[in-house]
Length: 402
Image (cartoon, rainbow, N blue to C red):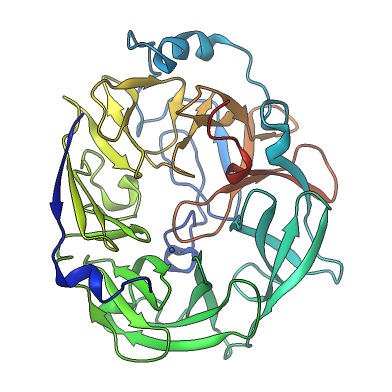
């Protein structure tokens, strides 16, 4: 697979300058869905369930590949016993309390770094009272941001971590597609600031992000919009027609909604645009690939009845072992896969995989959760054993090369 580079447009990125549920707005669609026989969608900061059975969204298991390197190991890996993520990446897995010291329920959002995980704390997932930070090394949590209570019926939507800010948006359940407001607080902690609100089509948020001086989002219809953190009106970033925000500063020509939601399972991403630098890469999908989705490092999709991965700018596709849950890249180089009732995180760079599944008592299903960030999360969690803690995997703590 090759790439070609073109500028997005001189005026587009300049305004953002130096200004980053699953992801696609937990509040946007609730994201409370189950992986079941024949139908798939994945819960964000809720629990996904995998049951034994044939799945119609990803037909068949993938075979081995003749491509050298990691690809040569995929066929053998698929036949090996699946080890849990704590065994594979001990430095990246910790025990996370399900509740705070004052009895509020914790919901993982994403990683703040290799040792810290951002959490919401509240009586319910959609009505948090604050953001806490969990330190994987000390096993302790601290309050980072205390939220301003919303009006009756107000719920929190997607959350995103940027270089300087943590940002989120809220909705009113009575009109969830026609009104949203935006908030930010310093990443180091502090008081939240209400940035502004949008109505109508702009409030149907597909994915959300934050730069150094703007909140940034794509509505469901496409295009990338921004609003100054200091206050102001929303405006469309030039040269973003036909693009959707993927994860600031990256945009692509397919929406963040899963292909099951859009009904377009074969649509390939063939554009990756850096809205900060203005560089647009035209991605050439491998022959017969479908559902291609790309990070800045890897593309994943379906090919020949299985899953395939290609380094951005690389030539030879590599088979992904087992069955890919959906074509999305997490943490730059990880994908979700499963075999029977066991879900795993697979590292495209090293070929390692670790299980993230809590099996049901009868062994017929398994469950896990993923963080609630708007862009692809960097944390996954599950009940490794009955009790008051989750096991949580932090992708940011996994070494780039092992």
